[in-house]
Length: 116
Figure 1: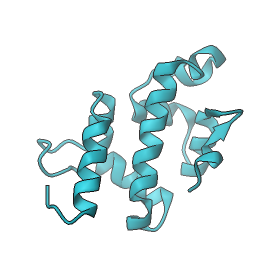
Figure 2: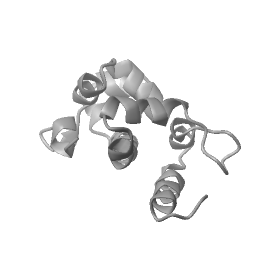
Figure 3: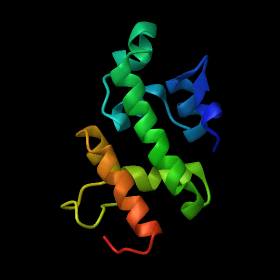
């Protein structure tokens, strides 16, 4: 899915992400490791921390979407599939603990044929 579909006026928009993933803004916040206020208050939505977490989540989902055939399936993977080498944690759990870069590196390694 194109990044612009997740954005509004140059910012990631939780409402648009939620619509694309057929969920709620509150669920998007939770899966990105954010509080409910982060997606409900305009000034919080535009904060660096909120935008960073939303960007990380969207980058990961976009990166694996071709593998699964849809954003919905990629989102399900993000939330529920334990990643080898990460003590059974999912991509969502790793993003929530500030380890999105490790998830992206893992995906790149798998795509390159390196079994992580």
